[in-house]
Amino acid sequence: MSGTRLALAVIGDEIGPSLPEMLSFCTEQKVRRLDMRTVDGRNLLGMTLDEVHAIKAVLDKAGIAVPTFVSPVLKWAAPGKAPAGGGKVDFAFDPSQCPSADPLAHAFAIANALGARHMRVFSFLRYAGYRPLDLKPAIDRLLELARRHDVIVEMENEPVCNVGSVAELAAFFRAIPPSSHLRPLVDIGNSWSMGQAPGDSDIAALAPSVDLIHLKDRDLAARRTVPLGDGDVPWAWELTRLLKDAKTPEVLASMETHCPQDGRNATAKSVAALRRIAAEIGVELV
Image (cartoon, rainbow, N blue to C red; front, side, top):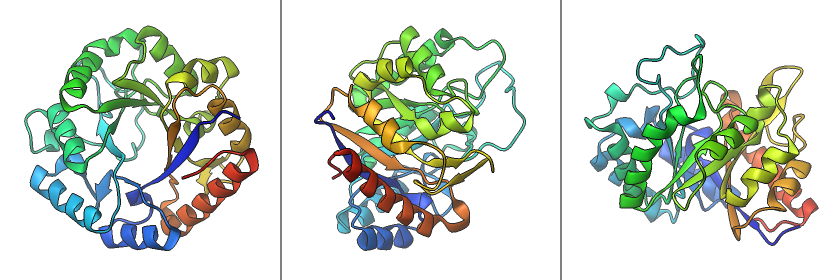
């Protein structure tokens, strides 16, 4: 194995909707990092900076760091493009609900308010005829803001968006190369859920730039997300092949359980599974 270690984080609302639920879980499970997306059912991108600062004050008092603002940026329709799907979009966001006239600038201000070095973004809801370079104007704006705010933009592969699979993520970064402020957020579980297990060449192409991954598992026959270790994704193998080509000393491993019917228990089980898998493959988990 490489010398790259994993830094455990949990997306707060995967535990429960409220801050007290998130913080009690962190105490119980000895988790020191929460990636923030929603609180009490409200997306942080729909909050004022005063509201976000109040959340951050509670987290600071509890000694909890926020590595990533798990934003919904670009998880909406591209200008002039009709989304190809018509189903429910998890954690969808209407940018008109942002309290700022400039949702992108507001997103980076939120990341700074949280003390988050990373901000997750998407690739617009999937539409017919998409090409990776379609995203360049949006990426150029995000990168201008990223440099100004010293935040790393993390492009995630999400099935309902144009960059859905790991293969599509690799294609995006072949067209728009990674940089110090633009990196791939590899979600292996999302790719498996699409029936597109990541190929060796795509993982090898992305791995040197990866500093953040999302973790979830999938029961492929039942077509549902399950706690890490309970599904069909071969996580020990996936982590081994990803980390062997990693170039950073630490990769954030963010638990995105996606088991809302029993979020707290499923996330606790997933954290335990990651600790076990890391030990099995000889990777330090901090």
